[in-house]
Image (tube, rainbow over the protein chains, first blue to last red):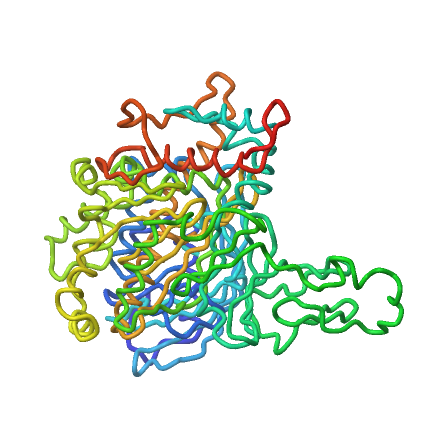
Length: 165
Length: 441
């Protein structure tokens, strides 16, 4: 968490936040992760390569706060059979590009290439991702204002992707 | 395996597990069932202009659907008559006035007819011109474009389109009639979801009304719980419109009703369905009234069929303008392609609603999809248990059933599954010999 005034914020602070967020996902710290999100923020995973319109054509994910909460709570449900046993995931991330850095306005945007591995039982899959984060500074702390996760092989057929790349 | 062996796998209230796990049965399905039946290929809005094509499969057969120079849609086997090279492998494109094989430049008109061969003199007197290969790319047996939806029958001879589908076409009619301009157009690429299970499990699940409140308790039940914790705010979050109805009680699904038609087609949601209670979209009803008049517009929109199975392997969800294609890749592998269509002349929010349903329910990232796939894959593995050979489909089975006539029954019956297997045996065996070596009629 960042304390102090906006003028003190550095690009490294922004980059550290991306690493920390990814680590939360890998360690399954989902309630902590949900707290990072602004209430109106959306997690978008396009279906089409370079898709421009998230809502009038199908996307993989276009999750509002309700859907993110539902997804997270379901993972621990008593009768969530597709998570018995549970999936695990791991992100290997490249150093994020900080494309927008505007501490005065409290707006930041990063683009990060990642390799995402998800596994359950004998199955393991690898996805190559380009992740765009829109961040906002609220009360001295970064919050997620939007996240877009683009799959390099978005036009391939997939089995279950159960966690959040 | 002969026709008698196939028939013996289907009994009035049970089917032998080999219909799901046997590679030999899968091969016979491809050569007989998927050859004799009418199978979905694509929508003609995927190929709006001359020379536009898509590549896909009919059963296990690689095909190209292309808009010919006369404006009609043709379906050709995707194979050069020379060496077998696939003529196109991109999922969609435009080939101009002709196809050209990338290997030796044999070229073909977009109806498949041979156009030219380089150094053609070398074939003089060889018999190529008189051979099947010398004619060009082979077309499938028959093609029918029904209100934009293109179906093919691979077999040269066989059942006609109208006889095969009969009254079931009313669901496609309802879907297309929901467009004020009476036509639909594709909206973006399909979701492509790989299932390690037999294709028939997916088709059966479309009219399985006793699984939602059980298998989807994890997603729909959790949604209802979170919404209650929030104090039931209005307007409802979109997920509450779409996912929560899966938790409706058994009585709701009983009252929905199931209708079956001959040749394996059928649908859930005769009286109403889980799609009946969506929020109205401003301007839509007015646009419908302008096109159809109030009485007809109401009749179209009051029909809220849930899932319509077009045997063998397509499901249409008319109120949400969706089509799911269960493409069989092996006894234990099925590719599910889920399409969304835009209602031409309707507000764009309807497309957004259909796309939302598609991603929430049909995507590899969908929690509802995860619930279902877990069950299919467990069944695909469990069916290898030698201790029990039969799969039960007896729910609400009473006495003898006549699948040659349309029927409406309690919404939790497994009659539609029995109807599918009745048709399965019929279209599997119509081109096979029986144990005595006698060919079917």
